[in-house]
Length: 270
Image (tube, rainbow, N blue to C red; front, side, top):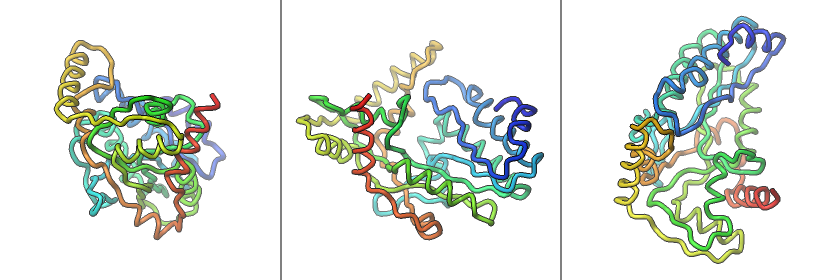
């Protein structure tokens, strides 16, 4: 990603490129820590595509560079980024990359696909699948007051494939499906796994206190994903609409129950 010459060499002969690489860690301490991969890497992909006369670039962004909304008025592609994501180093780096993508859309045919929180099988790290492991076969599960949008990873893959054939450059799509509170989400996990679990709410003030502790740890130069910003994220309803992508891509979204089951089956087999 950082070596433009090598990237240009690797892309040579390709007609279509999907730029999905990103540093998604929440533990990094400074915005510049994300620069080489998320920002410079994106610019290098663009330059390599232009040099090789690539027909189409599909860029994978994140829904959090757009403004979220409520269950009755969810966020969409026209809404500007909102707090607390305006203080999230990862989200800020992706927003910088998105501006580079938008600028390049006059010179290169680019479509942006911005997923919400993806679930499904084969999450090897795991990354987003950690939320499943938080509840899997646990006697007690503690949940925050907020909520988020969930989407099956296979639907995102389907959208990427459809985006490859789009002729109009500069279009942006949020890949969202079901808006759920964390309480409702964990209820689904518990029910679908047929486990006996007690769900316990975490008061917002406790999350704020934990966030402050995380801030202090980060000030000492110790990497942690605990911070006031990330604590605040857990208390908001981070909800989005999929109206645009539904209309233009004609995607039939997979129920989140299926995404949860696929995740559960994958982790139980490991």
